[in-house]
Length: 290
Ligand code: ADP
Image (tube, rainbow, N blue to C red):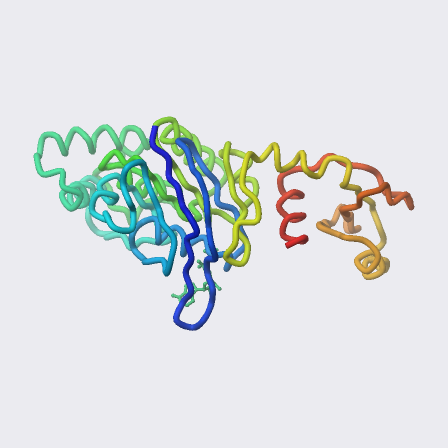
């Protein structure tokens, strides 16, 4: 199966912001997570992969295709679900799918109808195909987004921050769908939500201030913190003192009292207890140390 290979991809905007600096990634078939806080450069990278924006430097290769010089060939193999897309709220789902399929080159009516029926069944929207998108929930709109992105059976599916506004049931259904697509294609999912990655991705990279901090398997990333993470319940009045004296990577409230997690090469004693790292800890530790 073909891989997506990015080598030293960079992009600086006209205002001098270096959105991406030397991004190199090797992405195989499956769902790959691109995790990073707002402003990390995720959307810029996704738009470049979707051929909507040019990088200043670097190369992108999908199998035999040079994505930067063979844009048309890439687009034939590409599905893209942007962060926000305008929909035409007044026409029916089925009519809209036909319009989009024609734009993607599915010229023959019979084949087009078969593909649309298949996809709408797959994303569980077949029963509502006569309704307009104005009546859809957030989850239904996202599933429509996937159905339209799959019209041309893409080898590369790009999904930018897809879970915003989905309730837990919708999110699960959506993830099952992505996971199925990942069995046969490369799916790149960008998100700032660690739980999205944990649910779905065998491979991931953390993007921060336009750079890749780490890439690999989420489990391996968690392993890195083994024996270095400690937790303690403290009083609100002590917060500042602890933040000064320890490398606090995370703080949460439990019944109104703060619980802090700190990184430490040795056991800090002083009432701290060792804890196992989760992916959020690994993410925060990486960003903290960057
Ligand atoms: P993310 O998707 O991770 O939130 P973006 O790719 O949207 O990150 O943005 C990365 C950086 O580039 C941010 O500092 C953002 O302000 C800046 N940026 C994004 N788009 C533009 C643009 N069109 N012009 C100038 N700066 C931009």
